[in-house]
Image 1 (tube, rainbow, N blue to C red):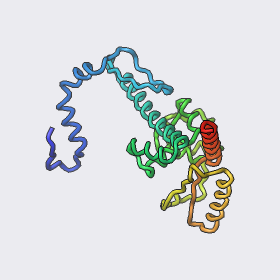
Image 2: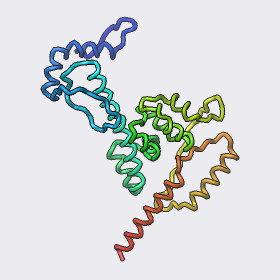
Image 3: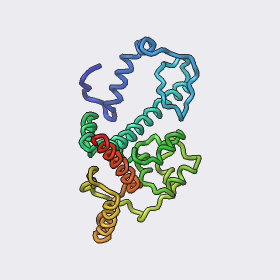
Image 4: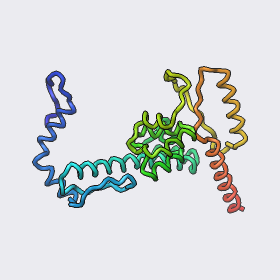
Length: 254
């Protein structure tokens, strides 16, 4: 395959040309090499929405149905794998000290600003149920959008058996009857983020802080502050775990 593609005809796509070159180059050897590296199985491929196991075997019975089911299975398992990454990121954020969590992000190649949406997905325990039912949306952006639903909207989604892992965000919003304050989409400019000191935060101060923020938003109508779903209960759980760990450490030291 050439490294440089010169003078493409009008309307030609570079990626398509490269793909065609690779197809012509590798077609004579592909089946032999695949069989050498991955055992082929003759068993019929069936898509299982509850599966969390990749199917690595090659396909012996080369039918559209078998290819469809294996590709669909592996694609959905990969999507669920990314959801579990989000779950574990948030779990780590809850249970590690801030410095430890930041070190974890560094080891994983993440920056704090790049994981906000992943943390939001992982923090929403309501998605656990969809995951275990095999109904977790494939789309990462749809998963994030669900974290913004209130409990009543989310319950409508869970209760509607027509909602599957392949449902679009538009279909889910229609079922949820998501209310929109205006017909026009608000254009929001992110100018910062709010974080709390994990060593000092307590429930009473958080409640006080929430009231102050709401008053602030009433005074400055151009500011929108989105609270994390069920954030007060999450902070309460974190504080209880942190204080329990501290008490245990003190008892051991004593």
